[in-house]
Length: 458
Image (cartoon, rainbow, N blue to C red; front, side, top):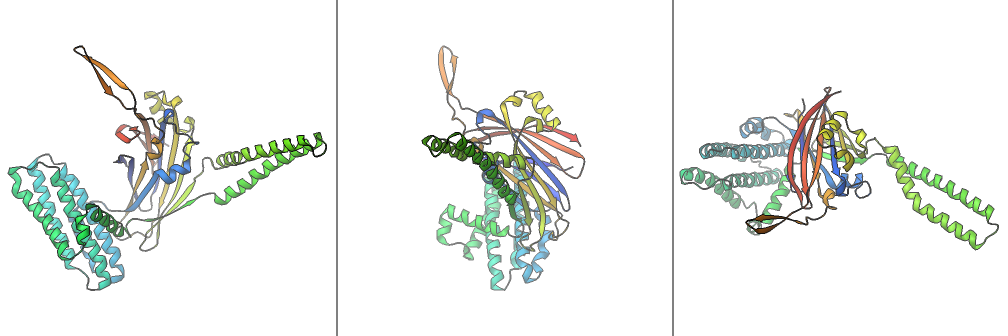
């Protein structure tokens, strides 16, 4: 059964992760229960505004077992292919190396025992040394290809060093493991010396942490070329919207002309009274024309997808996946029955005090066009809370307490709880839902707590 992971990305966003197999289908539903006191509604935040400002995604190839030894065995042979494929294979190798190293470092940091931590870290560094050594041994002679190689070599060297330093920074320095710590630091110093000897970065860049970090972000984006899919998003119903606008304008004009003819029949000749009535009629026309057009458009498009998206492999230009996207404010009655039961059994006030925003994403993955060695894609969807919290009140007030006759005062902040229910439906007949409670204030996300996991048989 498909699995989805929701976790906080930064202070202002959270992300959903899930995997879709080659040739598979996936539907993701995200229901936001926003308290009315947050001030979110179709007038203050339209669906289009939140889609373009608050929702982003990253889709890429995914391979199981992202660990350095597997990367070594799987991608070592890629460097021997034709020059035309060199850049693609180079990027695939570098992307997998970075993801695997990052994942292994995370696993090592979970080790509580210092001895196990340092043993695992040194073992990982040894594997990284071996892979990097073989990688550099296959440096191309062609100057054009050499430029691609240098960029990747520069990034992987810096990235490995930074990951090791980060891991060490989270451990207290202990006299019992000075040798192990020195060995890891020696690897990092060796990589820094290597980059300096090859003049990968200018002196000014090395002296400014911001410049070196920004340069490495750029190199990371270049590496992701060919791995991260190109997205072509198109808003649906553009021609239909023009027809609706024309029809709405025609209906309004019919009403206006009818009122004008009636006014001319009642008020004989061109009089000040007739001019005043015509002015009022045209004033109301301008007021209600756009509102009538928007209402008619929302009624016609209700329940239909608003955007379509193609995911394209940037190297072979193949369409890997097609997606349809919905984003609508919905009534409580539109919630799936099982979701409604869980929410209102625990928090019945949500039924009256929340507004519902529903995001739906349907994905169909192609059977063709995949790069060799991959059989699934990973989708990461980022939801920003910035557009949702801009109307929130700042924390005001205080709580008073007494202790031995002394009155103390403690400032408080206002917090809001947003229920987010994620539903996942693939080719099976079972839909899995997961509820999370997200606590926010005007500054951003304070906490994300997983609450319920339940399912529904279709």
